[in-house]
Image (cartoon, rainbow, N blue to C red; front, side):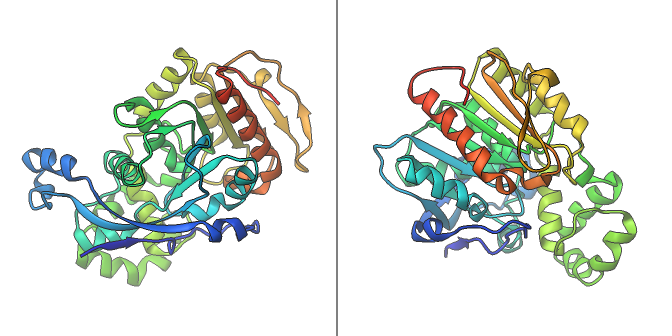
Length: 344
């Protein structure tokens, strides 16, 4: 039996999405994933001892704009979310003769059904590898990730064993330390464990709408989506992100880094620390005001370009899609021309 990974767990955003090209390119494919990972974990992790030998059988819904001969972009959404958040980028890059692939990552319904997929970075990375293998892709020119999608994105880039990745675009990445959206820590961490239990899940769904505001949880969503976000972050190995960001700097990997100063889930000082890990200081940022006008043009020869937006929220790449899309295109052209630095 196959479980379907579709786009039903989509986080609402305030900006409209032009989904014409996106919907014209939505496809489905059957995959088996995490088999090798679970074989290893069965020996060391008790909760995985009954995991299926061949992994999980899934039907993955994904957007794919086409031609295998074109430069290829992989988009990884955050959790909760769906590939539909990249609809504007898919439309834009498709018109510029780039192939864009954007799968839906598993939501909490998969955890509830099988009780194995815990949304760890290991599982998500294996899911992406198995998905890309199923559609016969072994080289990615650019991986674009949003929010918690950064964790499997950097692992996929770091691994390079089955998939070659040339460059990264990090859009409001979820952080190298505990973020505001994961507080209060004791309540969120306990909730993650309770929600993995069927009885705990049933109780939580009954009282979550009252309990989460009282506990000071700032994520406004359904219990499943709120706990999917918490579970993803809890198992993300967030401290390892600092190592990967520094490695991007040391290896001079072309990278676009986008964030906003009023992200409700991630503090600005965390974004600034990640920029420092990538090798840039504030004077090297491209700054955009509240209306999207550029107020500071960076002069930098770094492999990393930073775009900081004023009042763009957690979805800066959607609110200012016309700006971010052009910078992503500029990065792609530099990659295709074999350059490590880029500008627009």
